[in-house]
Length: 471
Image: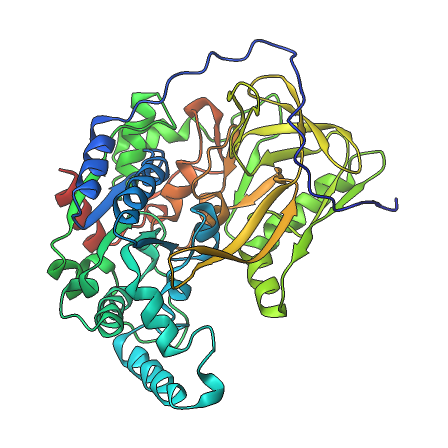
């Protein structure tokens, strides 16, 4: 059946909610003791490594830290560079990739950065290059206006890169101090997804914590221990064992109970590759009767390169096809414009019950409420030399994804219920832990097969480092 194309008009209308059941009473936001400690370390200007297992609120407290640092440095006329190791993570923290923030492009070590600097110095002597956005004078001015740099998902940066980052900041700021005298906040978990190393690239230092720069910076580590995603201490305990590559008999037996578990509704299936995800979502959507609505993103990008980056890094697709009855995941947090109450959260699941050109009505599984989901904005931004933020490109789209299948990589940071995992498809260190820890509840986890030793892969260096940090 031919798809009905929806007009891509950005929306700012308040969320309409049709209550079908009692919403849980909202609880006041209180930082855990370790979250408060992390905030205090950042506020006194120390270099910080913020870590913790899945669901411990790293992103939550990082937002508090960024806000506190901006207040701290604003008085001195300085900015805070907010970044992440990947484009997807950068959009989540409303920052840029660390590569874009530094202006190093694709350099991965000091040797490559040295060549990049020589090119910039040569261009600086050319009149035509004087006003380029990434020219050496403008880069030095922009980096000189920073007071701190925040890097989320730092586990995906190699140690070579962290050393290069330190060298580059010293060069840009003409300083012999660690990271050019900037306060540095690293956030991440080295027990989860490791650095992605392209074929043919030679890496000397694999992990950031092994780098000279990390040790020279006097990094203070704060490990968040309290898990907020799951409240079942047995489930949390067995997940922690898997995180550290341990699979004693009682943990193996515990997860074996999840094999073939039946649910009232189909779970979200986690796959290792996007190809598997797209194939299953398309297959399940085609099984539904009725017309298909096509929601096209309104993409505003001045160059093809920026458009490509934006579409690659945004969590949602450029074109979203929906039918009534489709299972969907919410890809944003939304608060009521009137009373400030939480309406839906990133990772909430629901069913499409109605569609118009401007919105889709979703029945939330968690609250049994019908909510109108309207377009949200995803943007690529950069920090200007004066510390202000400039929007380079943006798109508006419904914050929805088909929920029959999601890639493990894009599920990182989400909570799913119910969820099905096939561990035989896991190929990277920490990937099994990332997949298993997406489940909000033990009862909401289904496994295709039993957990085996070959699935529970961890880097010994990472395990030793985190045991030292977390105690």
